[in-house]
Image (cartoon, rainbow, N blue to C red; front, side, top):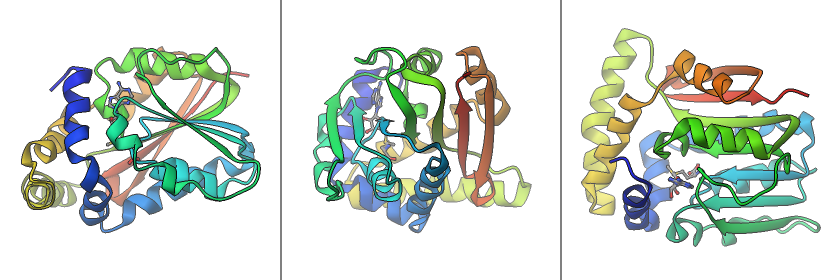
Length: 233
Ligand SMILES: C[S@@+](CC[C@H](N)C(=O)[O-])C[C@H]1O[C@@H](n2cnc3c(N)ncnc32)[C@H](O)[C@@H]1O
């Protein structure tokens, strides 16, 4: 599955059960990973945040709850049916505005240096042209701004890697079939994870897009990875 329209059609189908699948697949850890990422932005004191591939809004919601400096949060996604679940997750805080927009990560409708920070939760894997999406993130981020990209990963320990693949290739598609009636979508998840350029390969792509500093942390032995990108001051 490579083109943006086909990927959006897949997310349109699973949108109603997307959050439940995430909680069950990761035993609720996905929320913890988004929280850990959001906390890294606390000291940055961002006012304007882009949550790209925002989906049902979990990352934007957690960031909005945890980061008091935020005023304007833009939730951008290609699939309106995913975004439809986001508005109810906005915290009620005076002075906090959410802008929910349908747009393509490969061509963002924002001027350069517009955002103080960018988050992407499990979206990068789905972009058909990742170098272009990374260039767009770089363009819309202000100098010295930080982008945080959470993505599925592959554990490095041989035992954990073997357990992880059995879990990911058999249990997750089974769960997907039962809950979403869409096994294909949850076969796509391990396949796209296997095809993703992980760790140093992804760091290389980020640096090619212009980011001067790129590091990463692994969660769950590497099943989920948080990439931290900094644009030069
Ligand atoms: C796995 S979901 C992640 C949702 C959310 N960020 C989260 O943390 O749960 C991936 C999202 O990427 C979106 N997406 C895929 N291709 C896209 C593109 N080219 N531009 C914008 N969003 C895209 C899909 O519509 C989907 O909502």
